[in-house]
Length: 158
Image (cartoon, rainbow, N blue to C red; front, side):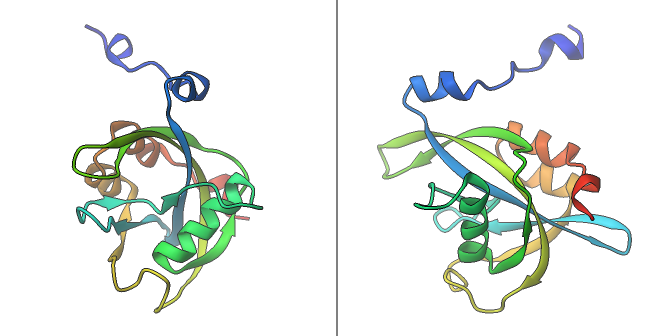
């Protein structure tokens, strides 16, 4: 079987919402250090897995604005968010041991200018910089891994 035919079909947000999926917004927090692109991952509160900052829509905010708020609350990130969705991925958000909600996450690039030491969830999460390749290997969602692996920050460096 060719690589092309073994790939998953692109996600249709409309189809997912029709099946009961909920929307979330997330930030691909990045920096360039010594000429190398790095992505910031944080640990989830429940399982300690490596994830991106993400969350529910914030009232009064655009999708990119919601991603910015989540990045600040969950990772202490300050920087510039670009209002360009760079990809979608899906996951199941577990609300309890027996109940989960399917979610589709729209991702927005956020160029990090500063990391605050103390932030809303600083006692509940760890954060760490990784190369795109390593970050893509640490996350559990295949669609997210692909987005991180192929993320091109060049349009967002000016």
